[in-house]
Length: 344
Length: 168
Image 1 (cartoon, rainbow over the protein chains, first blue to last red):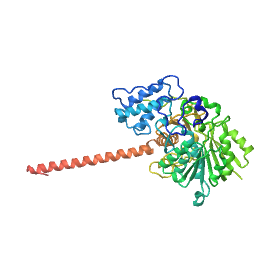
Image 2: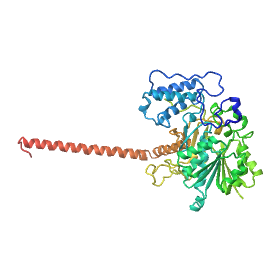
Image 3: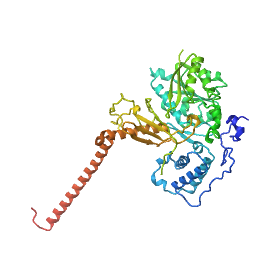
Image 4: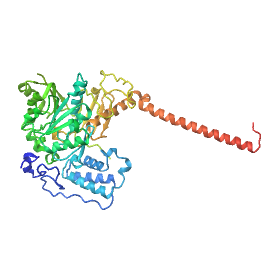
């Protein structure tokens, strides 16, 4: 049965129950052949620093990526902090209670199975928001924080921003995942309204939960729609929007197999795989854009570094009403964002 | 204990100008001034009244994201941002939060304070405020000591008069 992990589920044999939200409680995940025994809790009390160092060693020995950072993040979270750097010095030399030690062992054992830290602690930060995280819903990447910055820059400079213009300003997000982009925009712009879509029910549910946690549910409408299968519903959803924003699946299918286990074994492949050239969902979004956008409305996309020239060529040939405005680079200097505008 | 991850890094020159928009974080909007002029902001928030404005063209930013394509293909939680001011060589590292965006903004705030010290030396905002605070404490101590001395003298005078000796 085709579950949230798409066509890879049979190969790797690990899936949530169909449509289920809970991750199976197993210490080991993935098709690992070796036995994966959780390290035993030490009999004597240990300090925070000792526990962190011990788990860093366990992670290193098992080849878990970011051994030190993983250990720090999980420990900090259990002690009520976001980062270990923000803990008071004295706390680091305190002994862990039995209960906290057991919780630490439980969470770190999950990390041993290569579960991403964000799923282990069930939350992560995106710009100034803390969002709930849950497999297999796609975890926001740092690059996407810059996508939000680009949209905000333009929206805050909108000419004629007065009551009239602002009241009509709506944004559409395709592929909302955990809700990071939409919720970030809504938090920063009190006058904005947003419609968000995702093909995954898990993502729709998680976005809704995050919206309620942040008190933004009144300005966000969320729909379970697949933009590839149900274009008509998308177009009829909302009156012309000023902004269409998306971090759509943009990986090339052939690159999926070389992904780290954190991604391959735990995140929704449908949220990642953009087809042979990585452009399947992007092309659909751009095809529909003129019908969704108000005149002079803009599309903001996060893409693979190889995409921008391909997208520009394709749009010039195939989408008459869309003009390619510019390519923006991310913090590592890679071409990462495409901005287009509807020109009737 | 080293809290910085020794991953492969790509040092990239950030040649584009970035205008930071306010979210709920501390820093005000920074607009790059005409090239080469570290001008002074008008007095605004108490926290950052007269610090130099940053010129993005003079900054080199480094964020460890690995040698792969990044983006959706990578899920790393490390978010340390390293900012270098090319003309002075001053380097700021920031991994205070779990958001790269906020770490970048904070790194710039810290850079502004460091540049202020570098440019103005003794007269920089931070050093001036520190000096003022130290002076206030010294003044307080001096007054307290004066009071104690006065009380001591008074006691002496009273003690002398009781014993009947002539007081001049």
